[in-house]
Structure formats: structure tokens, C-alpha cells
Image 1 (spheres, helix red, strand yellow):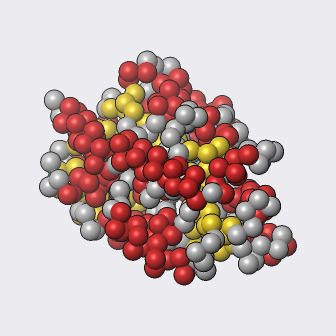
Image 2 (cartoon, rainbow, N blue to C red; image 1 turned 90 degrees about the horizontal axis):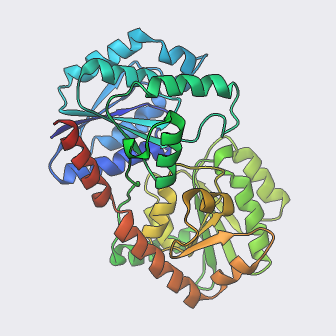
Length: 383
């Protein structure tokens, strides 16, 4: 099948865009022909270069919603942009178009473009929380525009978790069976890979055999709350003095992060090596995964940590949002009560949690499982 993956082009390093690489990897391995359509903006260069391993890339002079002064207001009424994108997509002669949107608001012009092509279409939306929920400026107007445009979408809508599906159905005031839930998927490393990576990368993390390494992965932006990661690190050190901490990623909060590390006396305990296009070895080298985001769709970083067999510690807001309170191997962070840390002090307890998280990733969150479900949607959309 010839499949066009159309990106709303918000960046190369967000989980919603990295999802395209995971999906492309699994689909290409099954023999499908893949194309990626993305903006010419330089922030998309990294994603486009990486995609060439799996398929062909077509670049466009498309402007992402957040590059526009009026954001969704100007995008939703830009008929010229929608018509141009539709022509470009049609010229690529795909059998199906898969539109990838980061949130409800972005890519509304591309929703119109898909309608103009008359091609079978699927649309994945990663963050389905409304602008009102996220306390964005002019939330009522922005939500109204998004709702109006998305209600006109005639293809298949996909959300990345059950809660995100419910959010989307409620936002559009439609029945839940009108939104398909396909959880994100990640590659599952072999046990041999994990052992090899761990041996190689523990030295890079300056971690000895007795050190317990806590890993965080994500852009250093307000949504990911990297400074909360540091606050939790300080609390953990009161109970696990041999703990060390690593944040893999970079972003606008990096200067503030560096100041906090220095001012809080954490320089010997905290590393931040920056962004890595291949984070897998860092997961293997770590002992515990610590995720502190304010909100998410379904974070690939957490799924990658599960696949590597790391006990996963999530803040209460994420546990409640994902409805993961009974997820095997999950630890809920409670800043006011240190009991959760005690689950991580003992290596035997960590190994038990590790086995549970890896089993859960294999059974529920593999890229092969995700890709097979999308392929079924593509085939259904063609009928």
C-alpha cells in the first residue's frame, strides 16, 4: 500500500512527530511504500532526514498553525493553503492519507486539505485536551474554531489512549464509537541489547555499580516540568543518597535548569547531556524512569522506558489522567509522602517492577501492534 503520512509540522522532537518514525519503521518492515509530507521549515529537517530510512520525503512551503500570528483563526480560513496542500498530496498518488495533528487546534487547514483531495483519510490527534482545559488564551474562541473544523472531518479519527478518545468524543459532542483508540507503540529492545547498552552507557552517566540512576526524557519546556524533576531529585536524595539523575533533552528552560542545579547543590548528582536521536542506550543504563509532565497525549518516553524494563514513576496528575493506577510496574510520585521512594530503594523490588513494566510494553505497546491496527484502518478507509 502507498501511504502518505502528512505532518502538521510543529517540530522534529515532540512525541507526536516521533510517533511517525515509529509507525513508518513498522509499516516499511511490512513492505508498504511510505511518503512523508512536511513543511520546509528548518525545524522539520531532523525528522525528514531520519524518515528517509523508511520512505520518500516531500517538503512544502506550509506554515504550521503556531507560525501564524492569529494561529488557528487564520489557518482555518486559509482556503489557498488548504487547496495547495490538497494538490500536493494528490500529486503524490497515495492510496490513503494519514494526517498527524499534535493537538485539537493545529493543522485545521490540513483537515480542509484532506477533504478537498477526496482520498481516504485517517487523522491522529495526540493531545485532545481543549484550550480551556489547558488554560490557553482566548480559549473559548480557539475551541469553537477547532470544534467547527473537526466536525467536518469525514475520515477516521484516532486518539492515542482511552482517556484521549473520551476527551475527543466529548469535545466534538459525538459518540465514543466515532473515535478509534490506538495506543502509541515503541520498539521493544532485546535483552542482549539492554545488557550491551547498559555496560557501555553507565560510564557515560558517571554511575557506579551501587548508584541508582533516575532518568527523565523530554524537551526542557514548561509542559514537561523539568524543574519539578529537580525538586523530586532533591527529595529522593534524602532517602537514596547513592541516587544520580539524568535528564535527556534540551529546550527553553535549560538556563533556568542549569541555575537550579548549581544553586541547589546538585552538580555532582545531576547530568543533562542534551538531546539524543537515539535515547535507547540511556534507558538501558538507567534504573528508574521519572516522568513529571503537566499533561500528555500518551508519552513515547514512558513507553520506551517500559520497553527497557524500567520501573516508571509518574506524577499523580498523569496517573489519574491515563487511568493507570493499576498498571503493573507503575509507581505514583507523592511529594508529601516518601513511601513511594521506598519501593525503589531495594534492587530486588526494582527488578520485580522492571519485569512487570517490560511485560506490559510487549503485550500492549509494541510498534508492530500499533502498525497492524493502523493498517487495518487504512484498508477500511479504502472501502
